[in-house]
Image 1 (tube, rainbow, N blue to C red):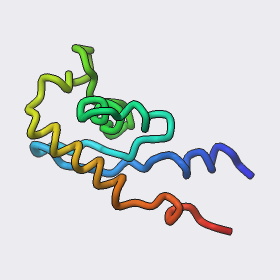
Image 2 (cartoon, helix red, strand yellow; image 1 turned 30 degrees about the vertical axis):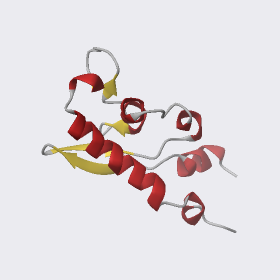
Image 3 (tube, helix red, strand yellow; image 1 turned 180 degrees about the horizontal axis):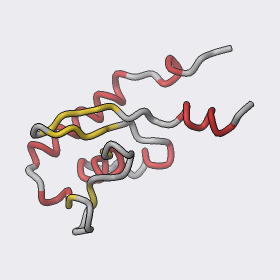
Image 4 (cartoon, rainbow, N blue to C red; image 1 turned 60 degrees about the horizontal axis):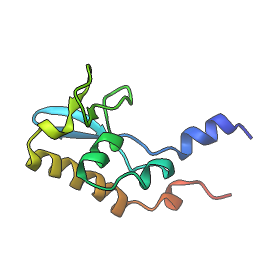
Length: 99
């Protein structure tokens, strides 16, 4: 068994999501981050990435990231709703090949 391959298969998959004419990538939270997704801002920080899988939001002004608190709440809520939809619409056991 190749544990590295298995680990990659079990990680949340990045899904493209268009916002304001730009594509970002969202995913379900992983087990470590799930408990930290306590509000809209934290969920966006943990579950929205760029094309390389790097976080695009932070809760403070950091070079190379967008302060999530500085963007329109309506936009925050749209992204959050898309992440929640991923959580609600997916059953991870359906995605794991059973043998």
